[in-house]
Structure formats: structure tokens, C-alpha cells
Image (cartoon, rainbow, N blue to C red; front, side):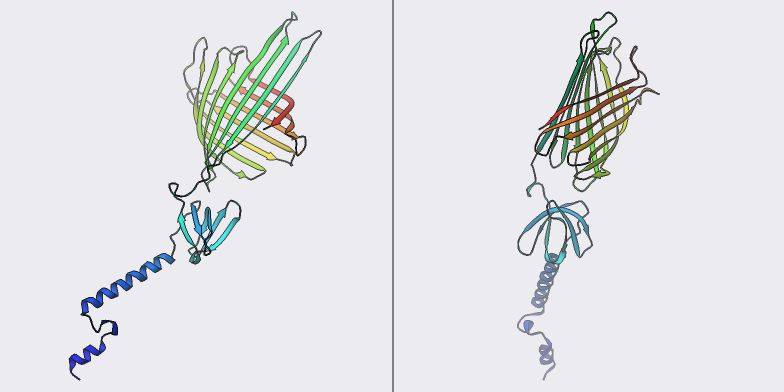
Length: 329
């Protein structure tokens, strides 16, 4: 056997009929296909809180939030099924692309309206009226709360004539931005106060900050908030400039039983542009549903405002409490 014959015999069967350059191309193609196959079986790492879509071996598709990814198993939070542990080798994962994947655009509305009225006739003629309404709009990435509070009181003066002692309307809109998998809640609060017993026509304010959901379950919610904003009084004899303010407070809701519900909101609002000037605003209610099927409920509520630099003739504390009947809708 000649040396050329021995070299030819050592060639692989697939390359015996082709020149060495063709064999190299075949080997490169095989390597590329193998790398592609490996790349398909090894998924990318996904970060905690990321929205993903998982395709199971049987073709079913699940959409949820990543809780952990150790390279072997993926822990997925599903809205209905809860926490799922899925082996990465047997599933296909894609990131939830808002341009191509379906999103939950459902919006829910809820609200309540409560009021009370009482008075007296005879030696004194007094009348009091309070009403409160809240409307909540929930979407996938936002939560809006619209609140209206109105109080009106008439009392007899020393001459027996009835005079209006309180005529106040409070309007507020609060928006929370919800990020899937994150407890942080960017918050915007805009309010308008119209009080005919003050030395101004109305006071507007706007505040922005962050909330953090320490507790967020079906029966309990605790969200501290902090941030900054501004307020301005309009229509005063000497119209004030814009007052820059900070704020820190908490929102707390608790369903004590299926019929009993407790809510309180309290904020401390110090002035930034004026030293030693601050306000506190608090609002709370205890609600008792009459029965499971009825939308009616009994309400015990209070509102409290403290201003350490009140207008001339006003007290620092303004505290109202009342009981009434409410309706959920």
C-alpha cells in the first residue's frame, strides 16, 4: 500500500469523496446546528417581578410574574393557580411584549355614599348635615380614588337667629401607579377645599410621592407614603403665594369580619417655604354591613384637621364626627 493509499484510508467515510475544504464546511455546519439546539434548550435568565409567558409541553400557555429562577426551575406567580414550580428544560419562555402579547385591560369600579342629618327646634334651632362619597377605579396598572366630603352646620346665636357655622366641601383625587411584582406605589394626590367660613374662597393643593405596600392582602392593606407638593389659597384679602410642603402619612384598611370594616388615613404636612408651619389631616370610618345581600351599611366616621397657624378667629383643631347610613355601589 502506498503512502497516499494509507492517508486516504484514514479519512472519514463522509469525506472520502470530497476535498478537505468541503469536509471543513460540513463540520462547521454540524457545529452550528448543535449550538443552535443547545441554545434552544437553555433558557435565558429572567429577573424577579418580570412578566413572562410560559408554553407547557402539552401546548397550554400560562402568563404570570417570575418569583425566582435558579437555572433549573422557574417559580411563576399565576393569578388563579398561585405559585407554580416549572422545570426549565421542558417549557418555553418568552417575555411579555406589550406590543404582541394580550394584556388584561379590565377595569373595575366600586363606590359608596353615606350621609346623616340631625337638628333641634325650640329654644335653639340647630341643623347639621354630613355626606361622604368615595369612588375607586381599579385597572391593571393604576388605582384611582375619588373622594367627596361635605359638611354644613347651622346654629342659633345669642339672639336666637340661626347662622351658618360650617359650610365646607372637600374634593380629592388620588392615583397610584402599580408595577407588577413591586410594592412601590408612585402616588399623585390633588385636592380642592372650599370653605365659606374661611377668609379665602378655596385652597388647592397637589402632592406627589411614593407609597410602599407593607401589607396588601384581600382583608388588610397598609401603605405608608411620603413626598412633597404645594398649596395655594385663592380669594383671600391678601392672596398668599404658593406654599411648598412636604408630606408623610399612612393609609390603612382592615376587614375585621365579613361585615365590619375599618379605614383610616392620616397625613402630616409641614411647610417647606415657611418654617414652623404645618398641618395634619386625618379621616377615618368604621363600617358595618347590614347583611350579606344588602348594599346598605351603618357608618361611624370622623374628620380632623389641625393647623398650627390658623386664620384669625379660627381654632387650631377642627374635628367632626358623625354616624349615618350608607350605600355601596
